[in-house]
Image (tube, one colour):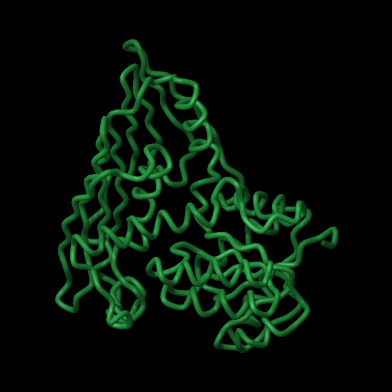
Length: 327
């Protein structure tokens, strides 16, 4: 690998802009190319972030020698096909969450990564957030005893969006669960593992889009109460309650800039500011893996992505969440 890792951006939307801004904070990262179905959009993005190459199709970027790794930031339903094309062209891949819409897609992606001997990781940036990393460390050290209760939610008002938007268009894998519900599900999985039983209930838009979902994960000695929705906002904090104390991740908890420890009647607040938009830590993990010739991350592995999508599939089955392209 060259001293600077050359990144290609696939899908220059709002998330990609935040990601590209954070790439510019990393000395060893270079934004080399951007691809969009609109050449004008690609050129505009390339000019803004000083990328040398702009392409009016994804295939042009994949077949070029301008990048080492691509960041895929398109709507969910395009993730699998684009990631597979990139890997078959020998590119490493960081793909925005969810890695695939269902387990079958993620299995195909993992298989393709192994066949082509390229690095692949789901872009679940919260896994690398400093506050979440610190909370994991405190739990492992026994700071709050054994976890018995976890609560996490994530909601915003999305009913003012156009029905063709990724939020409400069923053909783009719309709804709250895969977009933002994935975060509470991730936290429960990260801290408590795979549950023994899942309960889930959803409400739906007239076009079939899932609008809000409540979930309970049942464990032998704990419960996780989770929620996602696009019908209103929510507090968006996370509470991890144990036999000896509690930990709180501050709103918005999935990109927390601090945490609180409540123990023996006392509350201690800790600030942990993040660099840039918060993608820096995920990018640093990718660079670490590439420089070590690793094909997956130890912190968020292929198996972790398979487990996570299995949980999302189970929730969808319980709640009746379906997409027309899966039928």
